[in-house]
Length: 119
View 1 (cartoon, rainbow, N blue to C red):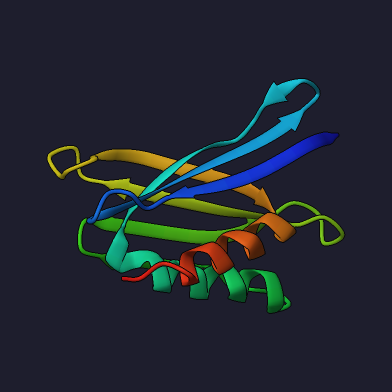
View 2 (view 1 turned 45 degrees about the vertical axis):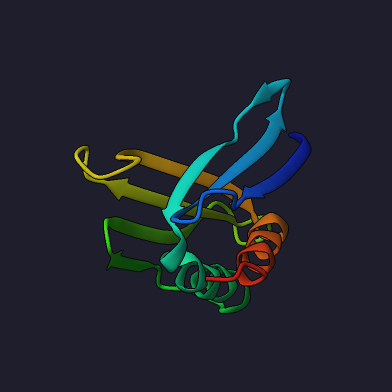
């Protein structure tokens, strides 16, 4: 059972956006960190909104700059989870694999926070 959840966006870097998600489940933080290029923020917000508003959202895989973003749903229909994976080449700035698994309300909140950024 999830007992606490929060999301925070750090946009202090002019080229990147860092998202920190905290999700406490049975006393363990199951959250994570996501790093995307600032230019990918609007696209990710669009996909998060689609995932939380479209029944049967088919998912999305998109390459933008060095970001290779995958957004998809999982979990039961009554409590869907929105997943975001970003695979950045190891040689790229902030290279690595990043991922978040959020409840729908926090995916909606993240979409709103990303839309508020000035790209």
